[in-house]
Length: 341
Ligand SMILES: NC(=O)c1ccc[n+]([C@@H]2O[C@H](COP(=O)([O-])OP(=O)(O)OC[C@H]3O[C@@H](n4cnc5c(N)ncnc54)[C@H](OP(=O)(O)O)[C@@H]3O)[C@@H](O)[C@H]2O)c1
Image (tube, rainbow, N blue to C red; front, side, top):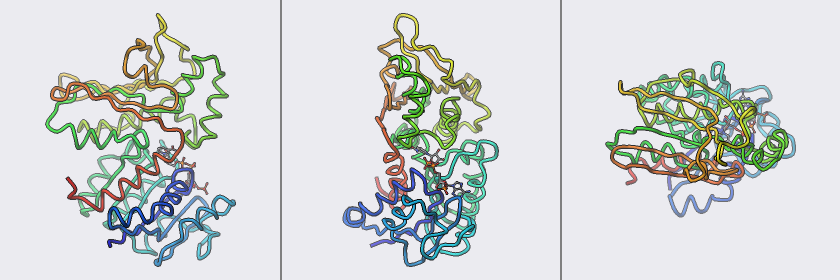
């Protein structure tokens, strides 16, 4: 049995669901993968808790659900931070699921870089450190021989990064198009059915799918972040989210396109003759038969077009944060099994 000790940064929708999975899938993880996965540290905005013998995930989850925080949990320290945890407890993997900060990716970027410098593997749900500092993170990981996994950052449970990095071997990718953001897709679908914009957004927030700051969803920045991560990780195109132009949102998008076409907030990476990619996010009217026009409501979908694999289309219907939490668990398990075929 291999033991993996985790530090969780952020205890919101995603990591609360991960705590539930760690508790409810404990036996399955042991039986199927020979893994004992423990939480030895956790931080939220108000404090942190560390226990080298392992924190009971169900108890921490119940404490958060009852309005508590990491600092007020048994053994916790009010006001302590994720950086403090790194100095206080030994762990194998740091998982980052705090809110996106598109100004400077902080404090997540510093925490992630500090973890990588110490040789911890890192699993991200937070896109900002990758969207703004992908190269820095990759270099830090290489320097300390740590590993960085982020399959949860692009469309939650949909394995976009995994398919793109693992399966399109030797292909030259002409174009990637995606409906990357389910909150705005749900809003567009509901608007086409006559529901007001604000009601549709409120439903996405209620389900725990919307970003902490939902402007990131509806103004196109969440999709731009995901496109940037795909561009760096899959297309080998060194860029930041500032290279995505234009970035437009859904607030003023038409309810439908000409001839009954469907409007989708499309992220597109299009290969240029010089080998780089043009990146854009904007509402586009698609013919009804287009694969991405059929990505409805809570769904997200990505279409890869390449010379060797022609077109590969993948999609997910994700109505809550479970898929994202499961993708983080997937990364933890896969990091522990680097040689799996
Ligand atoms: N929700 C999804 O379906 C989804 C899907 C893919 C990716 N993500 C990404 O996952 C991340 C988390 O999403 P979420 O829905 O779980 O967000 P959330 O519900 O808003 O939770 C954010 C958590 O981060 C904590 N936090 C805030 N500032 C912090 C700091 N300085 N240090 C440590 N913790 C801090 C908050 O603390 P308090 O509890 O004290 O407020 C809260 O526990 C985001 O980056 C998001 O983009 C989410």
